[in-house]
Length: 285
Figure 1 (cartoon, rainbow, N blue to C red):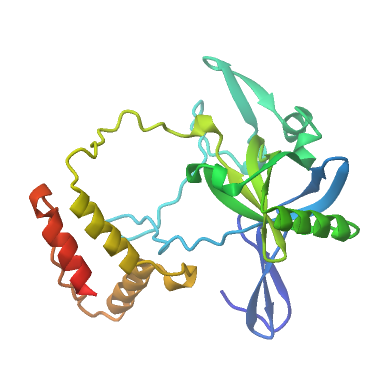
Figure 2: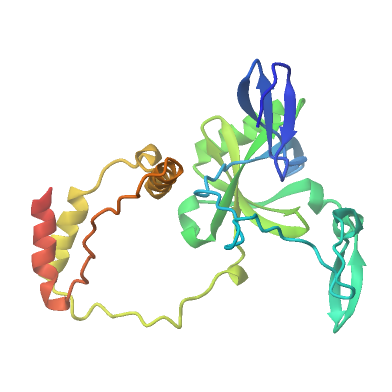
């Protein structure tokens, strides 16, 4: 992409990030993906919602035709006549019986309950530790709209002092969501959650009992945990696989032969070998 010396504004696919070019420099700005209000008792706090993630999803590989390396594109094709359909001619529908659809517009989706589509409705408060980690799915930042700063700050301070989170429901992208509002620094963060029906129970897994574990093995395992315990800093972790793949691509674009790293496959620890492996892990540090 060529950046000009005047300001250029470009929206990404979902419109969450605006990219500006100024004097040849690229700058990213967050933009709201939803505007509504937090319902806190009878208090309504107007807010903008921003995506709380900017996932780096590895290397973006294109699909190519093996014979001539031409890019492959995906198209929206009508099953009835085989013709490609433009986005402007596509609507959403629900198949209520085989081959028959009822068409739903954006107004229909909002009309199911207009209040829910514009309100993050606080239902209760609880300790965050009461919530199973499997329920947490995706974070969003909440920012007060002009006029809502004091109410926003009040909710933030109250949550901070109570050490609790607010459990809330709201409608977004045509679906009702469950989430918790919590404080992160000076910000209120809405952490989208899964409903219980979205989770698998795991009852079909073949899981071992602890009857064959000896107390001595537990003691050594606890010692290993203690040895490797430290304050968690997310900055200590990054996507090394993507970095290594980027190096492979750089070598190939220069016509160099890619060097294969020498790796030794890890062997599974047998039951009778656990104690020696645990002790070796302790002495390894």
